[in-house]
Length: 559
Image (tube, rainbow, N blue to C red; front, side, top):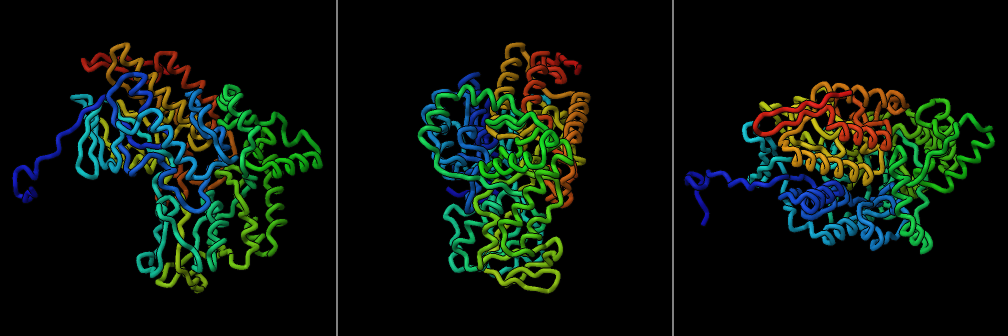
């Protein structure tokens, strides 16, 4: 029966479903958090996911060439020895479909699907102080209530589509790499314009160029990139990784970036020019992110960094045959690795193809999009059939702000963060009791091999909730003093590195107009961060205010 809108039953809100905890997002973070809260603590849990399947960023990012830049044997859960032993990766750097298969395997192996609500986008969440409950509303009007709300929405899930005049008039088709059609896109015989040359654009360009009639890359910010040297994993390596899982885990837990390799203890100034050149050559041939581990001071000493930067710029000049194109690609305005350092498969070689051209939109900006393509300031109209936006994301804060979260006394998260994100440990926000943010701003997150950061956060949150239950606490949130201290510490750690010198970095929110320029991730390293979190928990969750629903309050001091 279909009810008229005037019928009293038609206006009745959906009955709220109640759980101990709600999780938003079914990527690496949400799946593990569901497993921990449900199976280890015995809580009633519901996971809400906007997509029709699990995977998080790997569900949506299906663009050509989409591949992880962490080595496959490290880009996995390490909480289960059995899971490590039964899953085998095929390549050094896993491609999107393989990662998605892995996450579906995990979901089914631990019977997680039964507690996930797919096709459910959260549109609002507000905290009721009287009942100490979070009330969550979805796009379809469903309502949920829970004591704990845990966001597992990822740092890179809110697509950043630039506001370019005339986009609606474009007669062709356009796509954002973070919202790629599941059926794929056929570039055969098409004139394609790709805007953006960060990690995503660097992965996509070589693949698009293979079938497109013409690919025009619109570059605003030139970027370093290192060959991935990707390939199938040997049987010997697979056996080694399975046999040494505990050692690999130990290395990842001890390194600043959570990767399975150690940063060399030598300075770039400790060796001769010839020795340094040989070290960089060997790292270039090996490929991958280990290049930045060649010397300990590449991110803390500008002179040391300059040696790596010049080596990489020279490699661009050697690879790219046209001197003018090479000069534009090598005109990099930031120190090496102060933006996310991409790794690639034939990116610079792509510009040697006859069907690929490079447009320098720093010198000649995009003026507008026309029905026929893209017009630059010099009046040139680039005729296009397809536009690809490889323009990244409203990183770290965007996914959280889009959820329309309101804490105590109606305080909106957008208002609380109007000058930039303020958290304690990247895990909680003052004024938002019982809200946990997995890999939130103020944590290592995007500066780290993500599964390592995720497992640490999920296990900390799980232990925290277990502590609350044991001791009769119903609420937890950080004190303003603790937040102030942590924000100051995050800034100190960032300023001790060269990272803030990349002025156009999404680490600073610089890719989104109007976004506060604040360095968002924690640059002190994953190992240091893990130690700080453990110390805070061991000291009775210092810096947090814990209370029972009767109103008794315990404020843990910040040492």
